Image 1 (cartoon, rainbow, N blue to C red):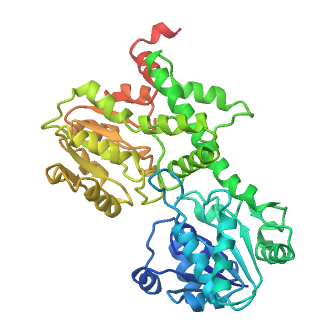
Image 2 (cartoon, helix red, strand yellow):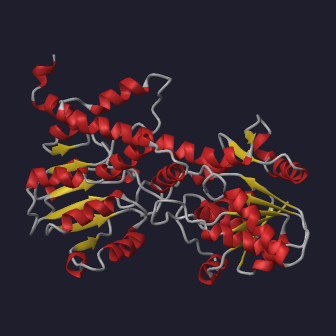
Image 3 (cartoon, one colour):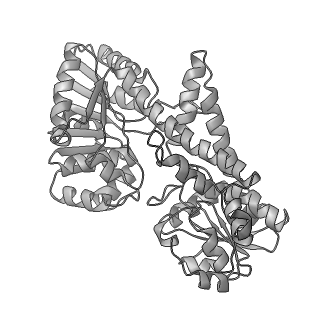
Length: 465
């Protein structure tokens, strides 16, 4: 099948590449000429494991093309995916500017029946706005052309997006009951047939419910994270090991282990934005989602946990001190720095006079760019942020190591070397990656998230038997 993807950001590029991998012919459209030229020259603007190989293979095979020609993109296929960004507006609502611009362009250039599939994460009712935008443009052209608007939200985890797309646990599709909607359903069934060969993965519903499902899923996952983080903060106060608690409650099949790890807060382009947008949707309808408001508040507070622990250990005046920071991206296997907890940590430490020696396996370029923006009004602070070529280099002469992102490369380091290189053998573990007993055995002072009890057990083992 021929498919048009509008937008070559994270969702659009992954969707286009994977559909081409399945044998479809895909034309990806973007207004950013530099990005399109970069893609046509073999570049990949984002880091996602496995994406570069798929893009290159299908571009060379002629199944994946990139263009800035809107008219050609609309003409290329009956199926038009809208996969543009929906950033948070100032009031927390989703900014639909790019979505509606895409809809307007489709209405401007379409000459026959089109199936417009909203892949972007959008609030309930957006499909109706897309339909209205297209119809207004058709009316202005004095054209009577049938079309259908479908909701097909993405469920891609950064760092595992290829696997998520190619082996989905579910495919949510919202269609209406009109003749055009039924025609769209037939086409979408054919497009997604390869994913339903062993068992049906597609869940069909009305358009509004499909839009809502995406927000509901991300809100639920964010809630689990913030709930566990709040328990971890309390665990520190009452001498409880939150890791033992995690194992205890996660063993209950009604709860499970997914998204149940305490840490220094979630980030990225989805959870923070979607929690706020869902809350804003509720407020616009006279409702207040108290739980989600708390989820967002807890996460904001959680991003200060590491800096607070460092200040309690070393004092609020950090002038002349140096901290090694391992991990800058908001999660492993991505270079995404959006809402990354490392940004809060680095700002808090440098504003108190500290220097930062930072390392991340992938996001160094993006981190440098983002931190320059964050500290643009404080050049003297920016001068104290240094980027290292490898993780052990960051430790030399540092007063402590702060682990922010749980990359695999950080899981089993040489603790003897860490102790030797650090000025003080102190680790602040924002992801509870290390075992307090192992730290104590290596003579390392250790601070996790909600792991006070585990540290006490090491120092006073007889109190626990």
